[in-house]
Image 1 (cartoon, rainbow, N blue to C red):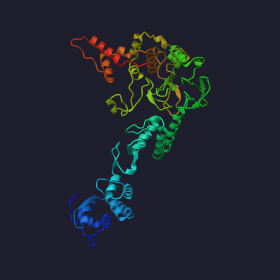
Image 2 (tube, rainbow, N blue to C red):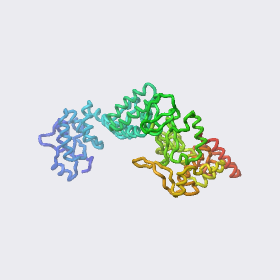
Image 3 (tube, rainbow, N blue to C red):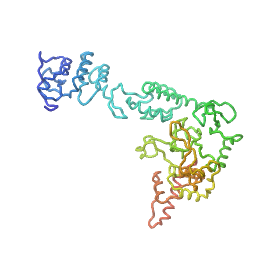
Amino acid sequence: MKRGEETPRRKRRGGPSADPLSWKMGALRLDGESSRNQQGDSPLQTVQSEEARDRHKTSSVVLVQDSGPTARVDLIKMAACLPPDQAASFLSLATMEGRGFSPSDVMEAVQLSKDFPSALRFLTHNCPICQEQVSFSKIITMTHCACFLCQTCFKAFFLSAIKEKTIDQLVCPQCGQPEVKGQEEMEYFNLLDTQIRHFLPPQIHELFQRKLRDRALQDMPDFRWCAHCSFGMLHEADRLRIDCPSCMKSTCCQCRSPWSPQHHGLTCDQFRAWKQQNHLDPHTTSSYTSIECPNCQVVFSLSRGGCLHFTCSQCQHQFCGGCSQTFTTGSTCSFSADCVTKGLHAHHPRDCLYHLRDWSVTRLHLLLQHYRVPLTWLEPANSSSLRSSQTGVCLVLELRDNSRGEEEPCRRPALHEYRGYCQLHYKESLVELINRCRADPGVLFSQAEIIAELQRWHVAMPTKEPEEPESLYTHRLRLTLNNSVPLRKR
């Protein structure tokens, strides 16, 4: 007999019972001989329909896939602990076809609900994020908005957000509320702290509390972070130099850049101008370059090596080390509708190392020649560069991606025409010089490259006139690029 067909109800010894609980327990009891006689080896069990029990007469039955003798016995034992009405609802929900409710969830639902429909509603709440059906007890309501989500989505979102985002971004994943500022800030974070402590691992809760602490410290006017490590300190003295007791290095308390002896006696603006005038030779800073977080303005000494994706150790802001553009996920990027399908990405300008590292050395030379920048600015100026030429390997220090986080020489082949650099670090040095001189790579773009660049920034292209020479049309395209997508100041 196929599932769903009607069959005469098996008459049990002693006559049919009017008690629905007794009948359901009897139907769930293992009755192997009768089942095999009627269905062969098919593991089907019969449960009397609600309509038949209401009329107290023989009617159709609903066939429910048997989950095995052990599971049926467990259900009967669980139902026996409940009052008759709740037990009947428990057995109906636990054996409801196509639902697959967990027995523990069903038990909770019938104990907290007044009747069968209420218990069914308790078990059938849809999470708006994952669209999964979960019980009401597994739904979490956000504290400062009307949004809700299941426990699984709550844990996944805040586990990732606490690790990778700033404290200001720990808001509702659906509506982005509340705006974390003003008097409501502490109230919101206190309530969120309770939820995170309850649902997430202890180490994630500790990280959340550390970020809250750092946020509070950063708002203090006399607090400063060390530019070399993650240590922070209060500085109330009048002098610019701060000495870190952790790494024993120094930082300027105003511009927050790594301290240099040349900064002594100079204001921060004067020191910045001095660096621009005197740091033309990249070999003088071949291992380090200064990088400023665009979010919190903390300045770091950044070692060479690794990718361009940089995460600020103070505020956890993610940005490009070549152009300082923010890295965002596709769902949060407001640049265009096309970004929704992307993962973590940034919109790099055309003079960023992200693009220029794919240029040939010859083309980079041509760009510098166009702006009359002499390559003699890249001449080796110290002993380490001379050693690179003598040993035949690049000795620029790189931060290795290992557990120790130590710096080691590059040791790639160093060519004489690359001033003792390997090709990788020579290109990086050329791009640093290009950025310092504000050279626009667009002057060397072909017509196809200009069109691709305009399309990348969603700029409308001028229409080519009939019989217009290609050179004139290319010139108009280049003017559109320069006017619509100018290079931003660094």
